[in-house]
Length: 164
Image 1 (cartoon, rainbow, N blue to C red):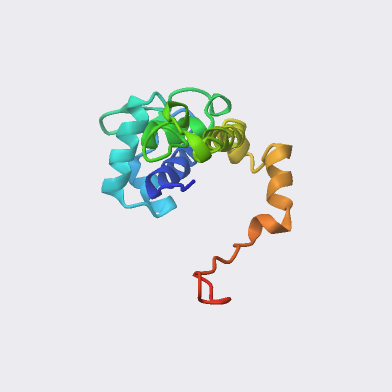
Image 2 (spheres, rainbow, N blue to C red):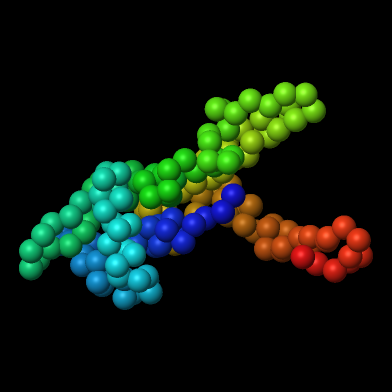
């Protein structure tokens, strides 16, 4: 699974809204500056987030963006889906829409299990969690494993131990 720049920027933007927002909207320019996101790119992302029901916008001098609902009711998965669509796809399709036969048969439950685990994590973390600087125990425990911080080396066939 890869997290696109669009999804990364979207999560950072709504997190900034969750932290900055009191009772007034936050300007896109302010979010772009604080989070170092290209402003024009952010405007497109905020449009997707508005259409996805994650943020609301207000025009005018006192305008800007705010969360459409409480930060505790918005998960990281909600944000990613609003800007990128399904969280896990295989060749652009949802795993449940695939059909494998023969020796490839075990791939389908593998992709479905992968999706279930990714969803479990991303649906279990809210903007309120991130804004408070806390993560749910299962996420903290996974991140605390030393192997989680290591990148396994890929080796090309015939190249001995030369990493890819």
